[in-house]
Image (cartoon, rainbow, N blue to C red; front, side, top):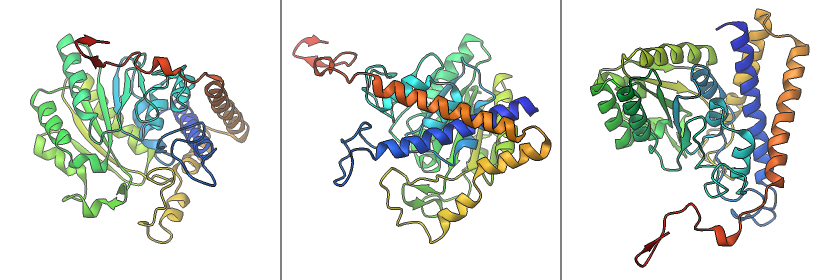
Amino acid sequence: MDSKQAVFMYEQMLLIRRYEDQMAQIYTEGKSPLFSIAAGPVPGEMHLAAGQEPVAVGIGIHLRNDDAVTAPHRPHHIAIAKGVDLNRMTAEIFGRVDGLSHGKGGHMHLFDPQVHFSCSGIVGAGFPPALGAALAMKRQGSDRVAVAFAGEGAANQGTFHESLNLASLWKLPVVFIIEDNHYAISVPKSESTAVSRNSERAAAYNIPGVYIRDNDVVAIYEAGKEAIDRARRGDGPSLIEIETTRLYGHFQGDAEAYLAQGEKDEWRHHDPIPRFRDLLLANGWLDSATDQDIQTRVNARVDEAVGFARKSPEPMPEDALTDVFAETGKEAI
C-alpha cells in the first residue's frame, strides 16, 4: 500500500471505533435501572465490532461502489468500510423514518442499494446472496466482484459449504471472508469446529485458502488485494479467514462469563488501531498534527450522524405495513 491508502485506512478504522464506542454509550440510555431491550433511543439487540476494524478496512479498500457485499449480524464496521450512508444507517439503527429502511430493519438488517450492501441477522445467510450476485456479474460479463463476510461460527452452516462448492464449480467472482473472533456467541472455535482453521476447508473445494493471524491490517490488505484481483480476472473464488477480536461482548449486555481471566485485557493490549498508528508514524506517513486532524474529523462525523438520527421522526403506526408484503384474505398489500 502507499501512504495515501494507509492514512485513509487508518482514518476508516478510527471512524469505525469511534462509532462503535458511541453506539455502546447510546444503547444504555433509558435501559437502567431496569433493563428492557425495547427501551431507550436504540431498541433491540446490539452487536458491536470494535476490534474487528482491520477486517472491514483491509478488504474494503479494494472494493468499488458497484461491488456487492453481504455482512452478518455484526455489520457496522463492514457497512462503514463499504461506504454506506452513515447518517441514514444511524437513523435506521435508531428506528427512525430517515433510516435506510425507514426504521423497520434495525441494526442487523441494513440495506443500501446505492453501494450494494446488505446484511442479515440469520447466521450464514449472506453466503447464497453473494453467490447469486457473483453469478449475475459473471453472466453480465462485468469485472465486478461479490464479498461475503461471516463469523467463524457461520462456517459450520450448510450455506457456507454449498456456496463454496458452487462458487468453485462455476468459477464465480466471489470472495468469502471469515472473521475468527474466537467465539460463536460463547462457544470457542475449538469446541465447535473440527479443523483449527476454516481456511483449510478451501482445499476441499479446489480454491485458495488463506489464514491471517493477529488482526494484521497490512496482511489483510495484501491477501484481500490478491483475492479480489483474482476474482476480477475471472479466475474464481477465494476464502480468507482472519483472526480478529471483538472488544465488546457478543451483544451489549453480555456478561462474558465464558472468557478466561485476563483474556480481554490481552486483546486490548494488542489493539489494532494503536499498532497501525505506530507503524504509520515509524514510516513517516503520519505525524501528530495530521493524527489530531483525523481524530477531530472522525469525532465530528460520528456526532453528525448521531445528531441526524436523533432529529429524525419515529415511524407512524399507520405505516407499519408500508413496504411490507402482507396478505389479508384475497388481497395482497
